[in-house]
Each structure stands twice: as C-alpha cells, then as structure tokens.
Length: 524
Image (cartoon, rainbow, N blue to C red; front, side, top):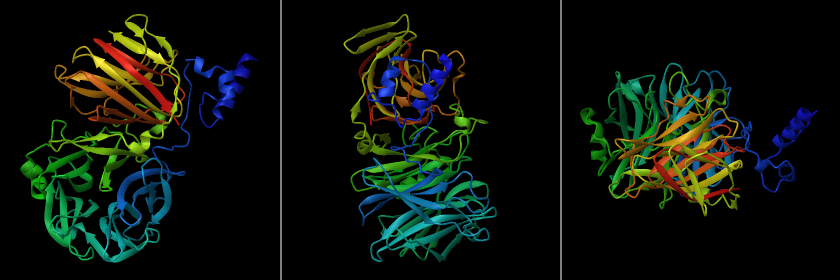
C-alpha cells in the first residue's frame, strides 16, 4: 500500500508543468526537504529553443535591417525525416535572444528528383537597392551538392531562383562535397561567397565574387584547410580592426567551433598557407565544447552573437558525447552566446543579457548534505579541502546558478555536479582541471559516483590561462537538459546533462583547498 501511495504521488508530481516552491503538492510532500534521485524528463524549452516537432540543425543567423531583429534560419530535423527529401529551411525571429517566434517553413525541399531534394546550410543577405532578401543554400542529393539561391521581398514568401546553380566539378572541386555557402560584403564593396569543398582529397574554401548577388565569378581558393580537416559552416566577418573566420571542424577527433583571425582579409586567408598553422591564440581558436556545433554569427551593430546547436543523445545517455562509438545525434536545441573581443583580437564567448534577465525568481539555498571531512561553513561561505563537497537542494526546470571559487593554489582542482542525490550511484560533474603545472585549466566532463566511468572522453574543454588572482566567477544557465557554463567571461562550456532539473546539485573540491562564496540560484 505504501508503494502504491508513493507511486500515485510521484505520478501526480510528474504531471506538473514545473517544480515550484509555491506548489501545494510539492510543499505537502516536502519535496525540497528530500535528496533522493528523481528521474526527471525534459519539458518545453523556453531559453534554448526547440521546435514543437523535431529539432534545430545548422543555424543560419541574419540581422534583419528592415525589421531590426534577428532571423535565424535552420535545417528542420523531424526525426524521422523523409528518406529522400529532408531538412527544409525553417526559421525563428528574436530581438533580445530571450525567446523566439517561429516563422515556420521558409524554403521547402525540392522533389526527390531535383538537385535540392535535401537542403543544407547557407546564409542570408539583404540587398537594400532591390529591397530583396537573398538566401544562398546547399542543394543535396546522394550524388552531388550544389549551391542554390532563393529570394524574398518580405522574409515570408520565398522564391527559388534557378538562375544560380554552382556545381563544384565545374571549377575543379568535389562533386559530392560542395556546400555551406556564406556570402558577405568586403571592404572592396564586392560580394564574396565562400564554399566548403574538396580539391582532390584536400579540404579548401572556394571563393566566388559578385557585384549584384546574381552573377558569380570563380576567384580561386580563399583558404586551404590544415592537414586532413574540413571546415563546415564557414562564417566571415569584420569586428573592430580584425577579420575572422569562424568554422566548425568536421574531423571526428575535433568537431568543435573554432576561428582564425587576421588584420586584413588577405592576412586571414594566409593563416593556413602551406599548413603553417598560425593559430590565433593559446586556445587554438576553440570557442566551446563538442556540445555546441555549426556555430555562425550575426551582429545588430552593437553586439555580435553566435548560434549553434546542442545535440541530443541516443537514449538520453549523458556519456554519448562524441568519442566513438558513442556519438551524439545530429541536431538539437538552439544555443546562443555573445562574442567578446579582447584587446589582442582574440575571441571568447559570454552570456546574453536577454537570457540573463529571464531568471528573476530567487530560489532558497539549503545545504542538504556534505562530506564528513573537509567542509567548513560561515555566513554563506564554504571552505572545502581535499576530497570534499557541499550538496544543495533541488533545482527547478530552468535555473541560473552563480558562485565564486577562490583557490589557494593554481594546482587546486574543483568542480560542480548535477543529477546528484544522496542515493545516486552515478552523477555528472564539470571539473576545472589543472594542466601544465596549474598554469592552464581545462574543463572536463565526468560521470562520478560508485557506478560512474570517470572521465568522459570526447567532450573535454579547451585550455585557458589560470586567472592570476585564482578567482573563478562561475555562471551556469540550465533549461531542462541543456547546460551552459561561463567562467570569467573567458571560458564557455555548453553541454547536455539529462536529469539536471528537479535534482540536487553540488560544488566539489578534489585537490587542495577552495573557498566558495556568493552562491545564488534563480529561476523563472
């Protein structure tokens, strides 16, 4: 009978739309007073967009100078997709990136016998003279990839323009790999189109130029790709005094969003000349983890943002992060960051003001459990030594967590965990791991606990310089299973951690001594 009552109560809880301190059922059952694991599932996403049906693939952001908002086109992934005709281009619009309005399908696929039976990534640009929007996209079949074009006077009704049909083998490039056209206007006043392709077995970015967006001339190779890499979803822009190429590395061993920089467009092109490997900074141009892919940017003239997708994982397996054979699924949720340009031209990613302002309700913070040794607490400050942790009360569905970590030494090791209950035999941790004798740090993802596998290969973060004051200001945003971490406006780490919502979380010390302060949790 006791089991039956508990099951009925649990079923009633799972039917609720959110976990709130004001919910009479949860209050009655003392939900916030318990620390056992709860098998939570994703509900409706409202920060990191997912369509009501299907998922977001390869975003193509564009700032609309007419409507003065951001339009993000993307490849709609239905799951299952039709066998031959798939990934039509859908779209959303937003002003502050805090929420998105669906524009529905904008550019449909062709028929199974047409060159655009399936669609691939592209880009949008507005011709003010014609008052016309141009979207260049990839037409894909099993036999070839081609660059195609559609136009619209109002961003609602799009017409495919069959006058543009660029095929790789017409210019000495691959027939099957010729995709992801990106169009921008250079300082020369000319339109440039960059296409990801192969020349023989060597990855290159091909370049075409135009004065009117209609007639395009082949201008040779824009850039060769280093070693055996393939730069997907290229995005070129000027920010301040620097030109940048942001791209997604297809190579399975990497598969991250990266960038190159140059003072001029020619200097940018020369970054990979002769496989020289002139990396832009000590992070080797990496912008995020493997759980953020196909990142492309758009600017409103004040801020530049980057959008990518955070993949779902087969069977909701948190360990399926990209290390073979545990590959994540293609497509997922739309995630946005703000680009931060540093004095030396290097880039990092930071939080988005519109997103931050959503988390307006303060959560009460309670210590639910802690390690037997190595923990002291005073006035909301926690000192953790050795292998120690502090477990806090349950999170809501959408959360903002912020805290400051002060390490005693640059070699100290700390982290924070989700999906952690007092009965959890495994839980998931983001670990700030010292590298290079503590002079650098790297974020690792680990499955910890008695049944955990430890370090999860394939999604470790990039190296970053340890702060000189040993202070780490950490902000974490979660929306259901999507988790985005920012540290010191210098480090960004996107991940998907199923079960984060409605479970407890912890801050941990693994080696050394760390002081935790200013711990705050809010939600909406």
